[in-house]
Image (tube, rainbow, N blue to C red; front, side, top):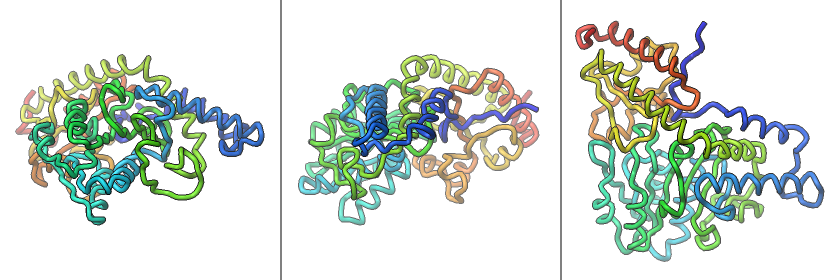
Length: 387
C-alpha cells in the first residue's frame, strides 16, 4: 500500500531526524533543570539552553539576548501584543492589526478592547495584500503597537514588513509580526525587516510541537513587556517557568538546518505547486486561487472549485492529508475569517481547500496527488471538467 500523501505543511511539519536526535539525550541522561546550576547536570542543561538560544537567534538574524523561549507562537503572539500594549499604556491606547491575522493575534487584540484599548482592524485587498497607505492613515499619535503577520497561514500572502516598519516607526509605534509560517520557508532577518517583536514556533519548521520563541529587536530590557505569567525568573523574567529543554534542543536542531535547506526547499516547493496547479487547471478551468500568486509563501495553495464543497471533495481524497481552510478551524462550522476578508461569502469559503507542499513532498507525491484530484473532480463535477 502507498503511504498517505502529506499536503498540510502549513498546519505542522514532520519532525526532522536531526531534531529528534538532538532531543533524545534530554529525555534520558541530560535531565537537569537549567535553573539548578549548583551541580553539573544543571550547568550542562543551562549551557545547552544558551547554545540553543544562539542557534535560534541566528535563524532570524538576531542576537542571543533578543530571544526568549515560549510554548509556541500562540503564546508568543499573546505575550507580544498584550505585554507590549499594557506596558505602553501610558503612551497610548491604540493598536492596529489586519483582518487576515491568525486568531491568536485577533483574539489577543479583542482582549485589549475589553481592557479599554482602541483596536483598528484593517481590511485587505481582494488578493489578500494590505495597502500600506491605509496602514499609515490608521496609525495616530496614540498608536503603541501594530501587529502584521509575515506569511498568511491560509492563503500564503506576504506582507511588506519593511515598508510597514518604516511607517510604524515614523509615528513611534512598535511593529510585531507573527512569522510562524515564514521560519524555514523565507529568509528572516530581524534587522532588515525592522520588526520590533517577532513570533516563531518550532513545529512549522520541522521541529517539535510545544516550543516557540519571541524575539525582540534590541532585547527585552528596553521594552519592559508586561509578563503573562508570574513566578520564577526564567527567560529574563518575561516568561517564567522551567524551560522545555527537550523541545528547545529540537527547535535549535531544526533551526540549524535552515541555512542549508531553505533555498532548495523553497525552490522545490515553488516548482511543485506550479506543476500541481497547472494539472488541476487542465481539468477545472474555473478553479480559483485565493491570494496573490506572486507575493506568497513557497508551496502554498488555497483553491476553490466553485459549487464543490471542500468536505465533499476531501471525502473522495482519503489518501491525501490536506485542510479545508486553516487547520485551526477545520472542525468549525464557521467559514474562514481570512477568506471572508477577501470578499468570499460563506458558501464560497466552504469550497476552499488549503494545500501545503514541504520538505518531505516528493515529485511522486505531487503526481499521485494531482491524479487523485483529477479523478475526484471528474466524478464530482463531470460537466465542469474537461478532458
